[in-house]
Length: 249
Image (cartoon, rainbow, N blue to C red; front, side, top):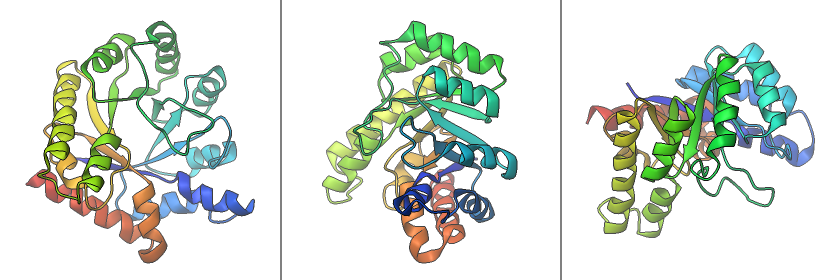
């Protein structure tokens, strides 16, 4: 059955806007759990623009569902991950000037370095994941470096969906979804877990959730945005319902 990992970065974004102590991302994680989340995702960025080191430590200590740490493949972040030991570490590209992650990790262009990072994380008992574009060369490279999970970047699909009037039958939307389906099949054929995420929301999530073999979606901004109006538990529960409804077809 498909699972939902809730990204709570932007709870911390609100807190850091005032450099205060609220809202608390750990409290958000608990509420997400009570709403049906199967995991919690946070991205500890090098510039610490939202999630802070203490947040990751407290989440590791206080949450009772799996923790997915998004991270750049740097010496600092590998050290933090090996110390905290999240259930999963997802390697992502990171730029200081980007508003959010703008594309998948170029695994094919840096295989040797990433293979070493994956080996260190695996030795620490952490499941490794790579956030990649829906391209077969990247899937093949991810398999070669030894990650157990590939998360496909759904941003191009989501942007096509929005720009084409939220029409799931638009040729450009269908084409982007087909890229994800093909890459997902290749991920599974290579023995890796097929996850997906980025820019998914309550309107565009169901076609992705219905793809064959998809295991988990990671969704943050849309859920946190809706939670402002209806609360975190309700926002998570509604997203989970849409995902399960789509998978059951």
